[in-house]
Image 1 (cartoon, helix red, strand yellow):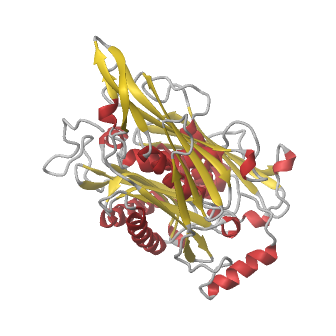
Image 2: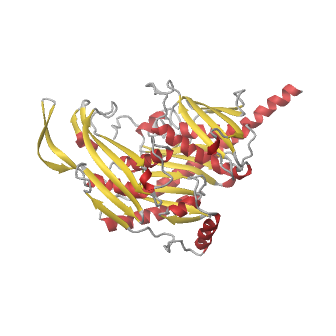
Image 3: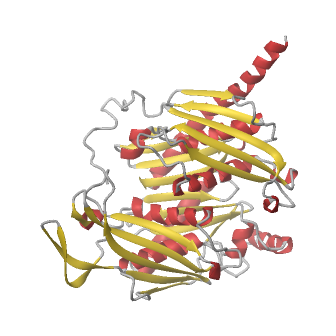
Length: 244
Length: 263
C-alpha cells in the first residue's frame, strides 16, 4: 500500500522522532480547564492537542433517549478543521462517528450507569491538533473530564496504542508511523481492574505479535495512568493552596 | 443497543451458559449454518446473499471509474457502505446511516482493506487521473444477530463474484472490449466475532444473545493466518487473558471456515 523508502526505525532502534521502541511521547495533562463544563481536561500527547468536556449527570435532551433503568453516556469525538495538514470539513465524517462510538464504549465500563437512571452524561472531545493516536489521547482526556465532573467511576480509563513499524513492535505511534507502519493497535485499559475496554487493530500482525503489542500498550497505559492521577490531584492542590 | 428482551430471558441465557449451553442448542464455539448464494443481482457487477442462521445479508458490488486518492495515485479505490434497512428489523429506522451501520461498514472495510484482499494496483487506468472504484454496498435484509460476520463474508463472496469489463487504454481514453474478467483478488480474509456474556466467550452470537452480552470482539484473518483487523464493541470489557483466548478461538474458527468455504 505504501512505498517504504525511508526506514521508520534505525539499526540502533531509534525511531524517526528520536524515541526508543517502548518509549512514550511527552505528555501533559491538565484538569479543570473549562469553566462552563462540569468537568474538563486538556491533553498534549506528543503534538496531539485535545480538549475534553463532560456535562452531567443531567436530564437527557431529547428526553425520549433517557433510559428508565440507567444513565446514558453520549460521546462526540470531533476534529477541528485546522487540526490536520489539509483542512478537514467540520461535518462529522464516518471515521469520527465510529470513533465517537468506540470512545463511548471504552468509557462506559468505568461508570456506574445503573446508579443514575433517566440521566445522561455528555462528553465532548475536540481535537485541536492531530498527530496520530488521537482516539487514545481522547479517551485519556475524556476519562479525566468525567472524573473532574464528579461522576463516580470504577477506575480511570487510560488509552495508548502500540503498533508495528519495520518489523518492530513499538509503543505510541505518531502520525508518520501510523500512516507508514504496518499495524496499529489502540488499547484502552482500566489498570486497577485489569480490564481492556477498547481494542482495535488495523494492519497485519501474527497472534504472537498481537500479544506483544497489547502487553506493550497496557504498560504504556499504566505509565499514563500515573500522570492522570497526578493531574487530578494537582487541580485540588491548587485549590487547597488558594484556600490557605 | 437497548432491547425488547425480558429480564427473564436474559437470566435463562445466562443460566444455560453456566452449563455450556445456548438457547438455540449450539455449543459455545459453534457457528450457525452458513449459506452463500453468488450472482443474485444481475445488474450488479458482483453480488452475494449470505444466510447465517436467520441473519440475511445481501451485498452488491458496482464498479465505476473515477479519480484516485492523491496519496495513492496508482491504485484503485474501494469503499464499503452499509445500510440497515427497515425491512430487516423493527428496530431499524429509515434515514441516514447511524453509528451502528457506519461501524459495520468500517469493520467490513478494514478486514478487506488491511488484508489487501483486492489487488488495487491492477485497478489503475491512468495514473493520478483515472482508476476503477469498487463500491461494496452491504444491505442487511434480516437482523438476527452477528451482522459483522455475515456482512464480511457476504462482501467477500460478492467481490469474488465481481466481473470487470475487459478494457484497454489508448491515449488516456478507456476502451471497453468484449467480455469480462474477474476482479483481481490476492487475499480472502475471514471474519469471526465472539460475544462475552458473564465472562463466557461464545462464537457467532445471535440476536437474543447480542441483547444481553456485555461486549463483543471481532477478528479478521488473512490466508496466512495473520490477524488483519480487530474491533471490540459493546459497553463491557475484556481481560487481557480473555482477549488472547478469543483470538485463539477466532483464528481456529477462521481456519475451519476457510476449509469449508474453500477460500
